Length: 335
Image (cartoon, rainbow, N blue to C red; front, side, top):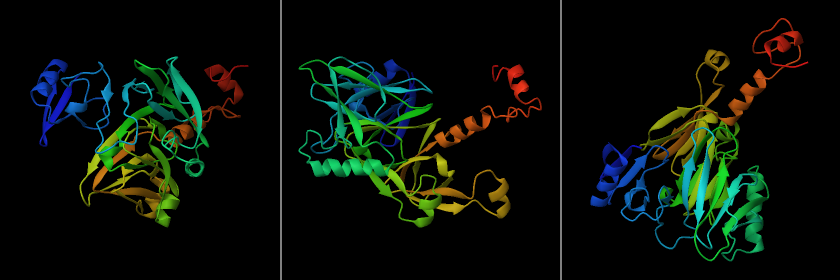
C-alpha cells in the first residue's frame, strides 16, 4: 500500500505504511491519500496512519465544523470492480440505504423501513417533512421508502455492508468538505449516514435539461455527513480552476459541487453529429471546484448487452448467416 502526504500544498510520497505512519505522527497537520480514497483526508482523521488508531483499516469521517447533524460513521470499501462498503456503527448510530442494497449486517443491527430519506428520523422531523422528502425521492425515480440500519445494542461496535448494484466504483464523499451539497446523477445514491438529505436539483437551462444526459432532474445530497455514491466503471475526480471548462460525454457525468456550472454544446458539424458516435451534444462543466466522471455509464453497458444478446435470425454481433443453427453451433444458444 502506497501513501501520499500533502503539507501546505506540497505533495510527498509514495511512502509505505510504516513510513507514512511515522511521517503522520511527526506532523499530523496535513492531508493523506492512497488508492481507494476518493478525496484527500486530514491526517488527524485518518485511522490508518494517525497516531491514535481507533480501529485498524477503518477510516473515520473528518469532523464537521460546528454541531454535526449527521451521525459520524466509520467505513471501509472492499473490492475493485464489484465493490461493497462496510460501515461500522457505534451504539445509537444509523446508516440509511436504498432498498435492496444490503449485503450483510450484524445481528445487533436493526432494520427499519422509513418514509422518505430518513434525514429527519430521530431529529424531531414531522410528518410533513417526511412527506416532502418522500416526494423528492419519487420525482428523482427512487422509492418512497428507504431502509435505516441502527445499532440497537448498548456497547461495542456493529457492522453493516451495502453492495453496488452493477460493476463500477463506490465513491465516499464527506459533504462538509464540499459546502454541504453535491449534485449527482439519478440513481447514484447507495447509502449514507443518518442525517443526510436526498433532494432534487432542477436544471435551470432548457437545453441542459433536454440534452444534458441526466434529464431535467438530478439528485441533490445535502448535509454534513458521509455519503456513498456509486457509478459505472472507473471514477475520475478532477479539480477545475475558476473558468476552466471540460467537455464530457453527457452520460459520463457522475457528480459535481454546487459551484460548478453545467451546460451543453454541440459536438461540431453535421458530419460529426451523424457519424462521430458521440451524439449531438456534449456536456460542459466549468469550474471552480470538483467534478466526478465515470468511464462506463450504466445506460451504455446496458445498450451493449442488449446489442450482443441473442436475436432471432442469428447472432447480431457475429453476423451469422446460419440463423438459429449458427447460435447452437457457437454455443450461444441451446436446443
